[in-house]
Length: 72
Image 1 (tube, one colour):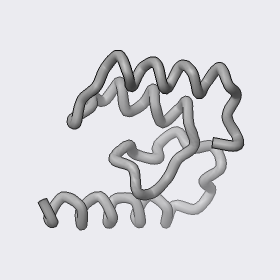
Image 2: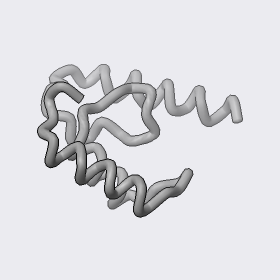
Image 3: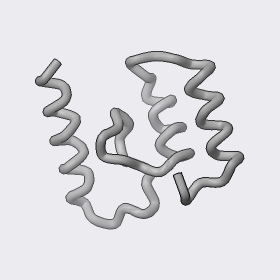
């Protein structure tokens, strides 16, 4: 969160509060991933992360998402 502006934080928080869901739409995922930094333990894909340069991050995210999915 250190890399985001307060405006981005407020927009993301407002979006999450006004659209509470456990299965966010693709558009919602894109919006949130564009507003706040990416973390591998989130359900949101790291598609728009600007600081990620390694393609292995996508593989790590997909693998961690898969592990969470099969554990349910």
